[in-house]
Amino acid sequence: MYTYPSFLSGYVQNVLGAGSVLVGMIVGSYGFVQMLLRIPLGICSDRVKKRRVFVQAGFLATILSGAGLSLVALAAARGGISPVPVLFLRGLSGGGAAAWVAFSVLAADQAPPDKTGEAMSRISFFQNMATVAAMPLGSWIMTRFGAAWAFALAAAAGAAGLILISGVEDLPPRGEAMTVREICTLAKNRKLIAGTLLATLFQLVTWATVQGFTQNWALEYVSGFDGGKLGMLAVSYMLPNALVCRISGGYLSKKLGPRGVVCLGFGGVAAACCLYPGARTVAALLGVQALFGAGMGMILPLSMALAVEDVPASGKGAAMGFYQAVYGAGMFLGPVLAGAVIEAFSGKSLLAGYRANFYVSAALAAAGVLLAAALIREKKIGRK
Image (cartoon, rainbow, N blue to C red; front, side, top):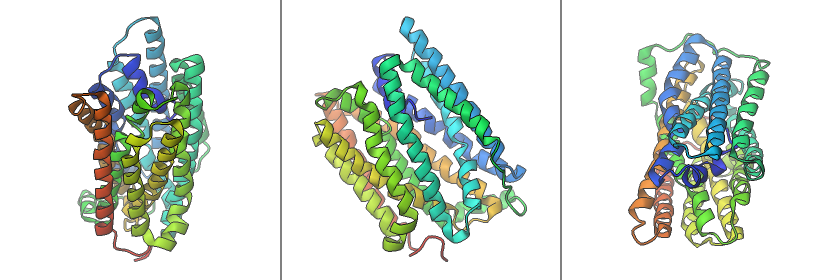
């Protein structure tokens, strides 16, 4: 799923001719589909008491998406083609990502209740390390052989995953599935609401910047930056993200408390967004990316653990579906909002539009500090 996001927005804009708003819609379609699917997927996985089949369906979606994007790239190399098909194919990959509901709940169910934060940190670490490998590899393949091959690699990786998941033991949730009334009461769970709001704001900022328009800005306005460095740009924030994810739910949480860790994470992201406009060299940009990534690693694992902490095993699929569906709104709205901000402030120059997007994102991340301080009251995630 991550062999091509590092260059996708630049590709659809510069090669397929999409405008900023359409670019934002294409990037955001990934989150939009997740927003639609994750609650039904979570409820269904609870009802049928199976997780693995939904992960298999997710791999199948990534295969179809990657193969379709590869065909679009081949057609574009032979002549003009509309960027609209990419909108639907990127949305299909979002359908594959929706399987993270089943996967993360399966991992949480195997951990003791007081180790949920550590379990979420662990799977986030490995997911991010895979991303660290995929993004530069996909970027290198795109530069060396063309975008079609990077998309094809995504399809091949999906096929490998589909084979491997068949050997994973499926652990069905214990107890009876929650009734409709019980599912509705989840919306009143304070910790679920807190974790969901924090994750949504986090995704809004992330998809307006590092997962959205930062690479376009770097290509246009950072001295010495070119397409061959897109993979490096991705690794510079994903590697710190992965490393901090590994300790945020355990070591850091014990030292600072969940509230302190999440507040520190949002503060780091806000600082990075403020620094982006002044990072006009490759070295400076990579340093700011690293700061952003470290902040990311403090937020998502703890917000995920907080969301499912007080939910019984029979309802965790529904709760995780709610959590991930709502933060999918942030993944969709982030790049769309960013595209609108860039166009609105680009009257004098496109550079002014990009700067405005970074400052708006910084303000949203700063709001995340206040929101985390207000919503997270517990000293230790996993303890009543």
